[in-house]
Image 1 (cartoon, rainbow, N blue to C red):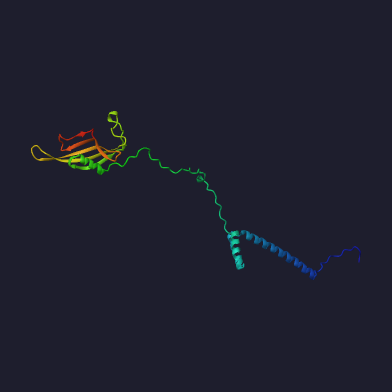
Image 2 (image 1 turned 180 degrees about the vertical axis):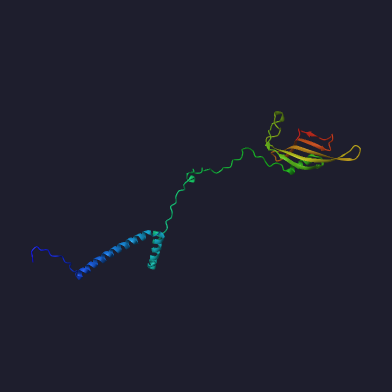
Length: 239
């Protein structure tokens, strides 16, 4: 054999132990890769689940718990995966920027006017009775109160001094009435004729401090049917 001569390389056959070690390495590498892929897939799957799906899985897991722990498990699952309540947001738009309505104080009724308060005025029946007594035999028809004026106290001053000659403690109730007076007139040459007087009369009903009523005629106007010369016409300035 020559020194320094090169010998060709020959492949050495693997022993049984070496082959087993090589296969173990390959299996271990493949298994770790599969485990890593499975973990990644599970992670992506878990992330892609909705809250409702997570809640459903958690509730299924709670059913496997002992009875004494199920209620607490269900509460914890609902608290963790249950729906969240939407936060109340402030309204936007013109309604949100509108100024608050002004605070108004309650309406206070106006106090009654100061001064003396008039008593109740005469009734229609009282006025009719007074007018009836003023005319003979109470022969009035179609009596009607047309208007009632504002009651007032007398001036306590005589008419000569510009007053109304009514005491200052006496109330005056102005009243305007209308009525008809029907009468039978005997004609000069025999026979009778019916005469109707249509009267409007201004009355001052006075109520003094003793509680007594008095009636005064302030003015009246009369028309007659048929028209005759003896018709009273107007007295006291008319009404």
